[in-house]
Length: 327
Image 1 (spheres, rainbow, N blue to C red):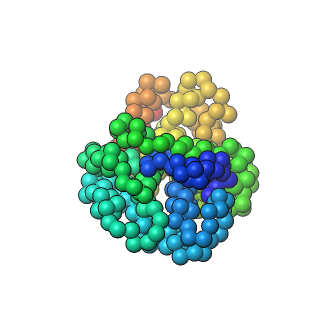
Image 2 (cartoon, one colour):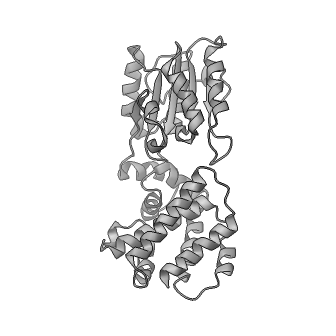
Image 3 (cartoon, rainbow, N blue to C red):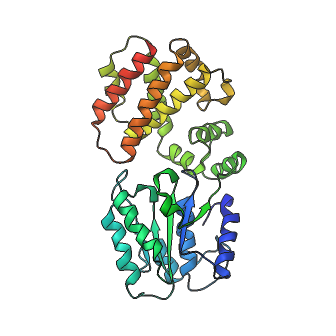
């Protein structure tokens, strides 16, 4: 199945398939949490489906190729992804594409390579992929998926047809979330605010109980405005993974900056802690907040590219820097 906000893109792509005009390389783009991977998987299954050329993406099919795609077992599909979360896609993984595209197809139909996320490729991997893009094989389609185009070389961007998947409207997101979780509209809106409008991210926040983790972190940040034992505080939030910790801290700090720069409370993301942020606003300056924000962004980028940071030391350093800003 694909999501309601993706139907127009699906119909456009399927028209290209019907007219035999589908490019050899597609780049699916859009913000995280809107269903790019699910769209790619469903499109892959449709291209390999043995029973129908039906353009309705939500038509159920139990043919062998569709089952194999769902089980990640179809011999005509190669998935390239990081070996672990936050790691890079390496050149040896990209070199597998050459062997895959040159081998005799074990089943009828196109061969499809899914690279997700494409921006995780390191420099050598990107260079190796460029050679494949420059000399495409017949009956092979490459589908790259990325939320960060800045991580991809211009040479790769220019050789792929970019397909932008839309972010759903707030009404679409609330309706979709309401069908999956039973919460009040105000809570659904809060989840979407925390997810920057991405419904799949909002659903994950709910399922993983990340909202309560966020509250613990925000309580810790607010307590830094008073004299606080940093080591004790770091120990209280040590179970929080670095990426969500940095995400929420950056979100908290950006809201603080908005208030410092005169924005109305209605324009901040974390509306439920507006009063606490207003209190903190009185104790710091825009300059200090910007310096802290730049530091947090640098840390976030390091974690994203797989740099192995000492978690306990990193949390302590973040709290110390935050306390310095509020002092």
